[in-house]
Image (tube, rainbow, N blue to C red; front, side):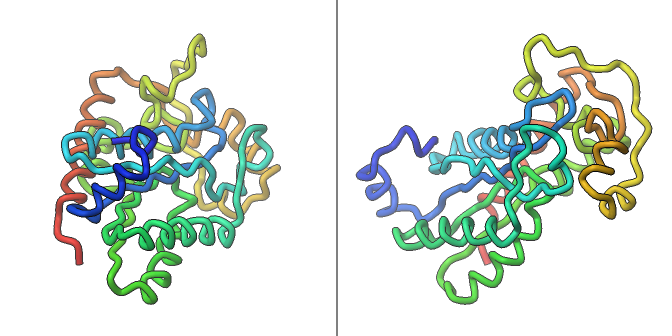
Length: 233
């Protein structure tokens, strides 16, 4: 359930019986022909879909992440990792203050993954709080399903092209783009990244059929829900 559908009394009542919540984090960055909010859309939607039958509150998605390589693509917003880490820590401090002791973070953006280490350090001062950090597309079952359908899958390619990340009246290219040298890309400047990538797709087809995409989403939602319900160390 969306936190925006609750008031503070609802949360206080909820915490009398449950200490679990979900925090989605995403980014605002270029995704070729897809929405600039793709990663945030994913993080929020998979959180809500996984939590729906569990009646667990889902906090508003954090819309900005760490994405410095895409600085030359207009609309991209990048936070320094120190800034992102501080924001996440502040949010965790607020949640734990009110009694949330199990916090499930759904991450929708690769550049945010290092924040997991910051969270581990934060937890050393909060021994009674448990946090799980889940990058949904990298989870074993979900990635296996993606690879089964098409192993050439990458940023801004078909694997991120769902009905909810497409833009109205935007036509997707109908060819398979050659895969980019990712290691070379990581060593490049933002100006070089734009020159190398062009439209922003790392490589692969731009779109596949919705039946395949729905299969991936079903696996991803179920896997996320399983992790929410699994043991909390």
